[in-house]
Length: 159
Image (cartoon, rainbow, N blue to C red; front, side, top):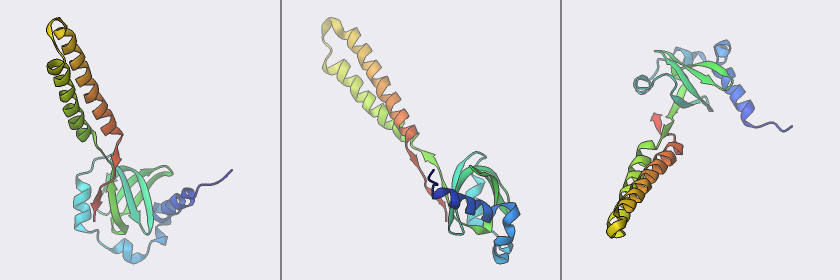
């Protein structure tokens, strides 16, 4: 069985920032006060927010458990860890493109509805064309929201 290169990296990250291995973090890092911009960036985040942190040349990812004045709790695949705020270099937050998908789907759906109801409709088939136009507009809207939800991006929130 072949081992992944990510396993030792995650293990190293957990060992660096877990409570039992705080002796490995330099005293100057533990004693330093966290930057005010980092504290401000973390105040808007609720529990469960997916984050990526860059700590001591290691990237750690997980769900936010809590953000305190000197540390934050993160639920990783290896278990919950505590990360001192002073040791964090960079923070990314996961976001989805659901609103953008909604807008694109609504515009495509409106175009489809106009096409089916105005451009093609003649005489007796008006009700059928309205139904087809409405169904296609709803389909485009649903497709836009679905695709937007599947698109994940990681904007940097600190520094």
